[in-house]
Image (cartoon, rainbow over all chains, first blue to last red; front, top):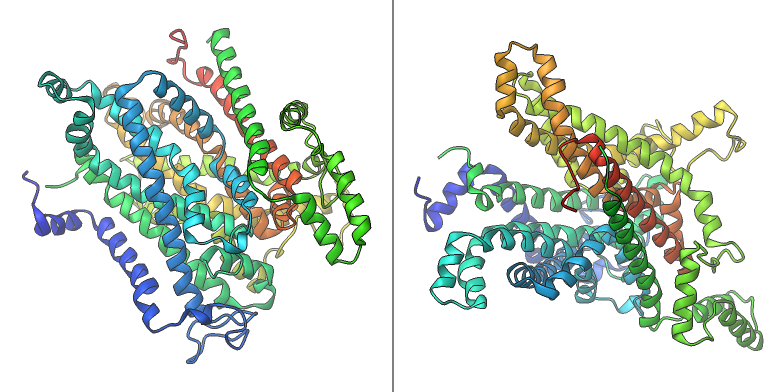
Length: 290
Length: 337
């Protein structure tokens, strides 16, 4: 029953969980598509009036062009890069804040815990997307809104769910024998959190990260589809906003509709497969075969 | 089953706290952001040639008085909270002098209609499919349904809607491309032809909501069904020689339904957020599309009003589910408070 170590163990894990492998491959493909290709594809093509508008996919424009003259290949390459980066910033900051708050409140309790728990309960009742609409639509100078600012706006709501989940996990672990043992051996609260609790929750944090980044991507797409954010930049959500704005349906520009949908679907399916595949890592008891 | 009044009071107190927080956020965010909706509106008017510069200053002052912006901040805040609690959400800037509450009243039934129907349908269908897949004595063919359903559940409804519109509405011309009813028919709710037309328009938005939420219900139900099937009381029921269908419906399904209802209550916020976007994609005449329009037009009172209304609606619905839950599950007691 020994879990394999190192790279061999990793390969074994993928063999047992093909969903994890599939998600990893899909995510790697998306990362390649949005990073390595930028060496050959200049960003200029992703802005209006760059190329001939309304062209179906051809040898010259393999992804076609939209009705204001954006080349859709660079639009999607840089759009995927922007949207994944926004999701990454929101997910990492949100999970980071959630981890700190979750450990603090779950382990130490007290007044701080009472306040944070109340705040989390209230914010769980208010749909985060609606809160995001209020915050993001009030931000001044949307034309200067970059990836970092958008990611940070999303992280304003992204910490709530992780805080709640990690707090519950820590509270259930706090009473276990190994924590008692550590307390008896004279470790301080912070030491116990970092040396004893953290390592035990690592797998759980890994699966939470996939969820948080997924949430950040979803939030940014939703806001941008409603026209909140930087209208000039070719992010994936803005591509959806513009194809709605210029009624790509009525004109029958199928490539303008299908291509961003395929890329967006690939992102979400990659995260779905990753979180299904990481399930065994977080809960080893669900492991099916040896 | 009796719910202790102290629990009801506690839940209602929590609801008030949620509404108070939402109203405070609505008030504070625009004050923190140095964006002046009044000035932006006037700039728009000047740009469209409707105002001279002297008229503009006068117009700005009268708008500021109208929205109470000339008073001290604490007084603005108290007035705002008081008005919000009375559901006086002010006036729309773009559609002045329409009240925000009037606009919400005109649009909310469209949203309720298609969101409620598609959510209930998805919940029932997904639950049944999940139960059949999870139950080991049903045909293995059911398990083929899961991967595609899981895929759909990962993709947001408004993204799926784009593809549905293009292939089913534009290419195949099975459904209308947009809107809630045809412009060529009189808007008369007693006319069956109009009702059919409304239904026809609601099908595609409803389908996009249904397809993406079906998988979630099925996945949740399947895993619970697997857990329940291993329980002793199921083995005991089998040992008693009960019919398979009776064990399935009365023993397994009944016990797995309760967690499903809980997650329905927890999903409400996500469902409403998703519906907002789906409506915008279809230009469906509901509240979500109105919100999208308000965002594009920078109509802040309307944005804040609609968001506040939706938060109230979701908080109320959650409260109702919490209060009826003990009637569904006799094992729950609130005596511990």
